[in-house]
Amino acid sequence: MVDGPLGRIVWRVVDAADYWLMQARLGIADTVCGPEPPTPADEKREADRERLWVAFPRLFVDEVGQNLTGGSIERSSSRLRRCN
Image (cartoon, rainbow, N blue to C red; front, side, top):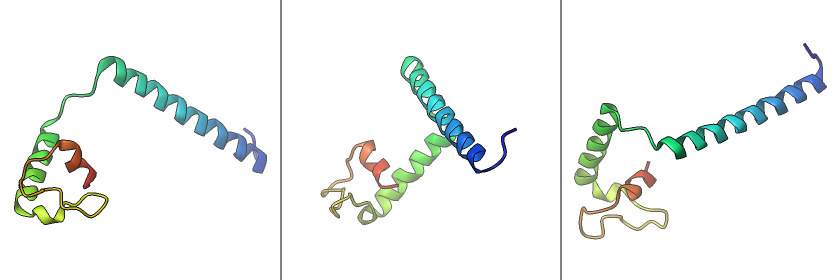
């Protein structure tokens, strides 16, 4: 085992390289196999967000401070995710 400050730097570099390599491999696997199907918890969370959206539309604003409802409740799911 390598001790000392130089050894710690080496292991931090190796750890960072391993992290990014794993992220690349997982990204490739997601591209080939597609995303995971939603779980029951994901569906419940989306239903809860929908209920909050309907109950409190003024709380959901975009990056420039505009209300996302635009006079109606219709919106895309990507806009809902940006409000997390």
